[in-house]
Image (cartoon, rainbow, N blue to C red; front, top):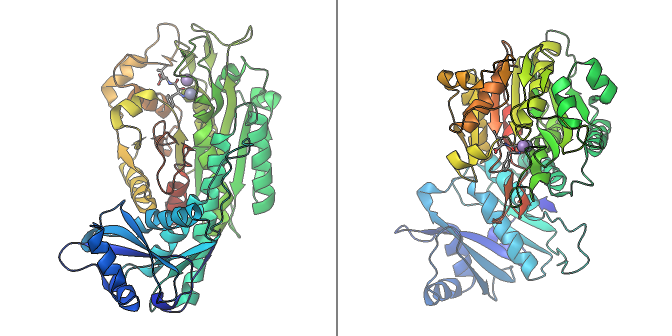
Length: 495
Ligand code: BES
Ligand code: MN
Ligand code: ZN
């Protein structure tokens, strides 16, 4: 997918399809509509009226028209003028690309309405195009609709186009990072193993000039990451611990650092607390946190933060076998705390515990954020599209919430209610790995908090938004790549 910024006026852009956001409400359909309408001798308004086109979000109308440089016009419902922000251009650009593809057109153009911040508009339009171009048809031998739309022209009237080129480049990098995360989540578990995630990390590190350490089973044992080893023990696929580092030029030991930690369970069968049919089918997605971290590390150089960024992925499978860990087992975590296993399906918090200990005690990262498809309870609380945000520092939690808001990803705070800590008491160990029935997302967060020490930390439970059954214009079915854009927005500022 190419994105380019033409310098001509909208009505003079030569394109197979010109998409125009159209407003509802009493102030008219907008200046861009009026200009195109004039260029077509009033045809657009006549057809919009005849077809009863309501310019509401999600509605669109295609009009073939002679006159003007475009072969077709796509009227995109944009709702009320006052409510439209640059973020909405992501969906509008994606719809334009989808319509162009559906008609086997080679490209399309999108007009940016006047009054939106040009740089943000270009950012979201580019993202929309790159995300809409995503397909996972590696294993399909039939029904492969070729994607024909390979270019989006973003028309920004009166803008200094040269100054906006950098926004296109960076948004394209961000979009490709999301698409990488989607590929990793959509890949079958037989293919996307811990070893494979390590190989992907190696490719990213090589291409982006990042440092990389991969810990194999013996290095994991040496690091005393006994919880990661325990979860991985039931599988023939060996576990891995991935540590990538972005270091800005001139960094020394005083340079502040951020650690991004992603849960990397490449298949979660539940272990001996095995999941029933209906709950296991999609569990290849249990590495979506890892995918988000790998995606963010792929694009981090384009954002060039002034601090060190660690990308950390504890990864293994959670299966059953003669060597698997059992309910009742006790293991000593990397930070020395003993954990009684009361449910082998609460494995994510175990592998994260060792990763968080590593980030806080070995790396002494100033800020730690983890992403994990951690609990079904979080989906019960917040629904399928919203991530739960927890943490031990109000200011950092707010930074993460603000970054998610800028990224257009939905997160909502959940409390780490102190009173619930008692639910994790074990008679024979420092704690057990599950609480009681109620507040499952919170007790998981409280469990994690025991492993971050004094460090500033935030936790995103992405069990809901990481995977979708209902496609949207810029989000295909399956892995969504959720979290990549929030992480990149976070890394775009001071943290
Ligand atoms: N990977 C699951 C959580 C999950 C569920 C993610 C549905 C995405 C969709 C996690 O490892 C798990 O099994 N959690 C248990 C915790 C319970 C045993 C305390 C759960 O949510 O049921
Ligand atoms: Mn589980
Ligand atoms: Zn899991």
